[in-house]
Length: 173
Image (cartoon, one colour):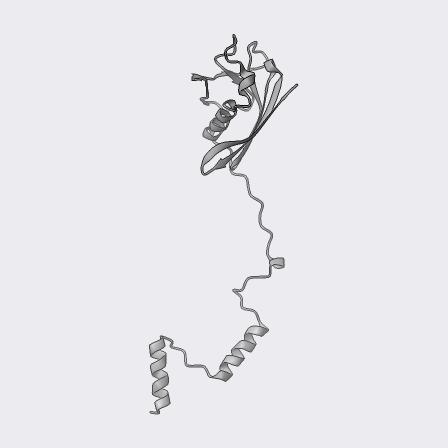
């Protein structure tokens, strides 16, 4: 056997490759074939990529999310001056709205909130939720408090698994 063959065999075993060593001519042919046809596993240029899907809304909000969001809204410092819980017929606090799920447990000033099924027929002051939207980690709530002639809206976001009131706006009418 020639020394070259023994050396090549030793190199293949030592390097762990079962493929024969390539000559410089083999390497140039391989480079030419790569230029001619791109490999199948390469990524397509950015212009040819499929557009990303828009963020899909998660399923309907859980009662726990609705409860947490509404609790933050009724505890909002911006709403507090309009509630006048010390006046007659203002405490315990009352809320209503057509989209309120069953089983909510809200509190205001250490007492459970009273839920009113038909706020229009209620003679006492009622904070009426007119819109509650919870989409993934974002929520928006609109309400009115007719006894004080106030309308409000609140925006909330879930950060690190907790809901946070990010913006509130109240207007008198």
